[in-house]
Image (cartoon, rainbow, N blue to C red):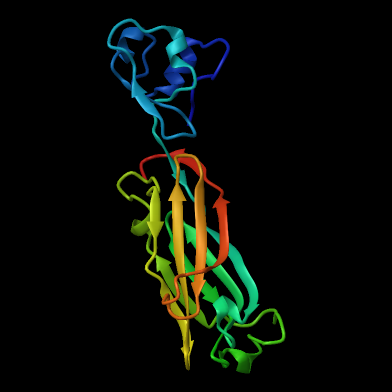
Length: 220
């Protein structure tokens, strides 16, 4: 994407490059036309009357959308006695997210009420982190259209998942849920945990952080 300079001198050639669908050196051709600010969701229209060169600062004729690149995030390398429930545990818990992917969670081991899944492979241990191991659970925390408006490509301002059970044994049910927020500039992902399948109020936060966003030419 080409945009006009944000300061200094603007040449007619800069304007033509930034607005290729209009592609005119005449100011009159841009009257009432839509402009976008690169790297933001801001847009507007040029005046239907007189237009000055200064009206073109930091503008483009191509809408951009914020893309969350696919990433695989370690949210809890190892946990035990989690969320107030003794005998619960997790090993190598990762969350995968992307604007074209959705939100999933994988782990190599879980424990609940002292029962363990994956322990026979050395994937989970009550004594500490066990490196490596095969992924034994893969759970979808959100589909793309739950936190991304697929008509525009922009994330929804707020999304809170219902929660997904990952492993249950005895009295305990490990559960995860994803929460996302978008304020027009920053996309934040939060991963919460509950040891009773969401029944105790999601009081444990495994991860909460802003994620990288790249602005790309639309459409989604």
